[in-house]
Structure formats: C-alpha cells, structure tokens
Image 1 (cartoon, one colour):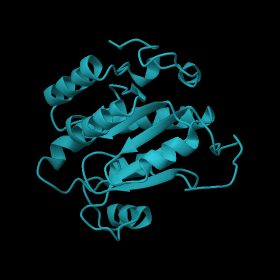
Image 2: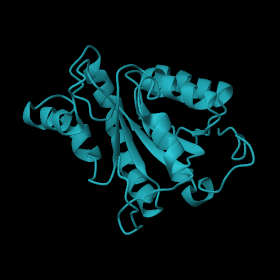
Image 3: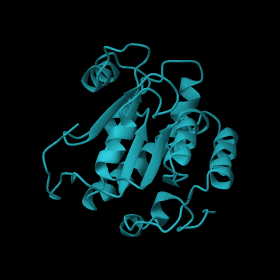
Image 4: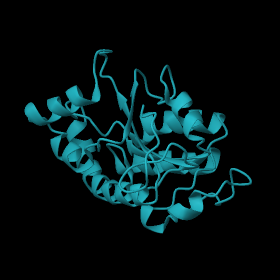
Length: 211
C-alpha cells in the first residue's frame, strides 16, 4: 500500500476516518448466474462510479477488495487484463469501475474482505472508523465483509444502489439484514453526505439505521 503522504488533488491522504470499499467489482462474471448478476450490476456500476468520484474529491481513500479466484499469484493488473483481453461477461462493469493508480488493493481468498488479508492493517493505518461497502454480491461477499466490519466496531454504510446480487429479492433481504442486525446505513448514494461521514461518530448509530 502507498506509504508516502499524498495530497488531495486527485490523490488520497494517508489518514482518513472513512474508506470506500469496492468488493469483487473486478470480476469476469463467468459463472452460473453471472448473466443475472450482470443485469443487476449495470445500474450499480453507474451509481458506484459516481460515488467513487465524489469520495475521491472529498479525500476519501478507495480500496478494491477482490477475490483471488483461487490463485494466490493473482494481482490487480492480471485480473483487469483478463477481463479486457478475454472479452468476458463482466468487462463492461470493469470498464466503469477500473481502479486509479492511487487506489488501494487487497486480495482476498474467501468471502470476507477481512479473512486472511491485510485489510485490518490498512484500515488501522488510515485510522478509519467508517467503511462504505459497495460491490457484489450483496448477500455473499458484501454481507460477510459487513459482518466482520461490525465485529470490529466499524460504522457501516452500505448504499443500497451501490451493491447488487443476482436476484433483486435476495439483494433486498440481505440489505435489510445489514440494516437491522448490523446497524448499517443503507440510504442510496445520492442521499449520503460524505463530509458528514468523515466526522468521528460518538456511536455506531450516529447516522441512524437508514431506511
């Protein structure tokens, strides 16, 4: 991860109370139900691309938390090249959400972004108290990562328009579980005040449960 201090002119700082996590968006979607997930992910990618631009303008670091597809030798560059050069189903999503040079990248072997990864270390280094979880799939890797973030006393924001599952009903159920059980703020990205999120919360419920 970057160790030098970065300014706010298109780059991210070394310290931030909030981090934007993009979960498994670098994804070829070449699996069962991949087409169904693609259909749900298209509007998500548009909303998430906009949210990412707004976050970076506020100095909020962006962290790509991505599956290693069972190969520990995988890296971000190879995953992106695969999605572009092999003309896979998920290419259009990757085109919208391709990382910038100053974004962070964490490789994960399982569903949770915290399991056997450096995410804990990175968030501690950045002094993060609030994570904005986005990406796919709402009911699997996003939910597992949210569970582990909650156990670490991190405040959770899961914008409902910036996550997707292969089925709309499954997505709705998972997002409601995160709201009720994990106290996540699930307001859509258009209703988020990113500058307010950066203020250190007195409690995990400082922003409310979301609707």
